[in-house]
Length: 541
Image (cartoon, rainbow, N blue to C red; front, side, top):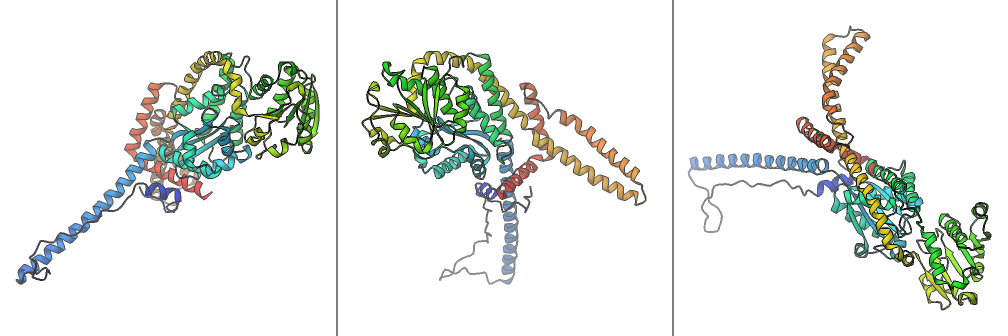
């Protein structure tokens, strides 16, 4: 395989090739042993005929050595080509998820790793700039930070992504490794399907995670690096999430993170104060809106909502007529907190809104709630600093504390999860079959290109023999004839390279046909060169 000079300088290509540690074999000429003189210098025989014979033999040995050296170099180069082709074409790239979730890492770590939605395209571009990453997606929520990639090498891909996460968050690699989880291919597929179905959520069946998976696809559209495999995975995950909620009762009675936050607050308040406790919600986004909705469902009749603008609050007020909603601007946040017994926070702020020095100057909460002010923070990064917990008159709870609310539903969660797993297993099999069917696409393209090159070359020979006096009609007829012959010839192979992935027997035969055609026409090295060109183009962007 001749690697085009257009992409020899590509950093990603150089790194890939350097991993093979190619070093041409060096051979030294083997001259016949001659006796040593007293001073250690080798002495040539004095007989001229013998001397001439020795010189000629040395020349032959040197020539043979050069030939052997050249052959060794060529052999080593062929080994590099073949090993590269085997590695990057025969062994398909892996789908890998590197993640930290509420199940494996504390909120203090997750908030440092969190990537705002607006930064997802930049993150995808940076991840795909890594040497062994072809495609990428980011799923960053209050409960999880997961990176999905299509990696040329599992080990090197994981290493590069982990180092990238460390660089962007400031968390040491060793600490990330202690809390991360790694899943590959089928396990990665199973995981995102479970996530989309709400099985991996703190609150089983909660609907917000499905909306967040949809948002990954929406943001990724048109982003270079959100490629066919990863986008196909997330789109299929959306289908799974919808199907699980439609065909099982997993969503019946299911609560969201916001409703669990309301439940937690009521668990911590005296029973007698539920109706009279003063509620304040900081942030009127999706999470804040759900908090208000569940407060109303629990009998709350009045809530103060602090937000940057009044527009969202007015929309919520029009939608929820059963509760009095009072709007306050963000600069009155501390004054509103001073008048509240429970403060819910759910903003996208990347820095804490409440610190110890803010809270310790606030008056005590009302006697009905025991004089303790509750801060229920469901934001990641957190809106309430952990130092606020040092204030005697305040209690701070974050998303990790919601486990207490859902612990009682464990048996019901397990039963519903088993119902959903049947669907997820079926859909995972279909997705893997679809991925397998994609394997033949490069071969189809290269086989057609190979046939087209032959057709054009032979057509040019034919036209040159026919001379310059042929008319356009004849030229077009000959061209159409050549195309027709090629298409008829390719029809059979193309039929045997296409399948929808639904029939395992047909898929197995299709992949066997693909490998046979690759061997017969030497297409694997062309496919490798195409991949390297794509890498070079992506690196230049």
